Image 1 (cartoon, rainbow, N blue to C red):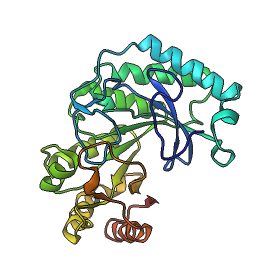
Image 2 (tube, helix red, strand yellow):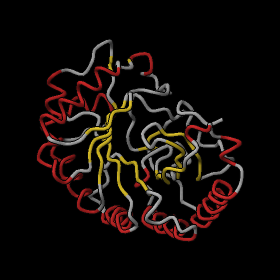
Image 3 (cartoon, helix red, strand yellow):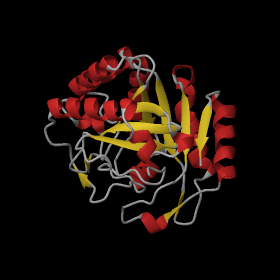
Length: 278
């Protein structure tokens, strides 16, 4: 049975399409994995992907992606997949999400993949009723082809979950493994919000026995506040599945009360609504 602590990409025996039970979506999410080689341009300490490597995905077989999604949705909607694989309390189809084992927008075919997935959803008459989501680190928003894909996602009624785990350059380097300036994050987030409805998604956890500092919390709120009226909200979540990275022993899951307190601080300082998934 699918569970929130098991997000295996091969659970359906397919290359690009995989079902999971998502805490944040609140039911079954149909994932689209474009990074089948476990390659990403970031290296987050909490990443659950085994054998994570730096880089981008191999060329996509868009016809296969379309066939897999069509076949899987047919089984899910018209067959007995839900009865066989999903507990009754979460037996709801919540979304189709570009996520997977790396940064989805690093695929040169990303924009075309969005259109292909949109066509499949239209075939099942799901456009407008089933959300299409992109889960992204937002690092490639400067590329016109990535903007085109997100614009198309927005036209299809979709939304973006834009990863921001920390706001200070030194903390971003430590948590996400990349050199990144706060100003660049803000520019990319603003661009994304113009193209499609955008949520910020933030993984909040302890590192080396210490919770994120007051300085880290203040910097995070300062980054989001100027864009508050353009964002759909914040998904603030804790560690649910074990990291597959070398840093795993250094990570600590925070108590729900600590996440709720930070959520209240974000709302007080920015006015942005916050959804918490401990």
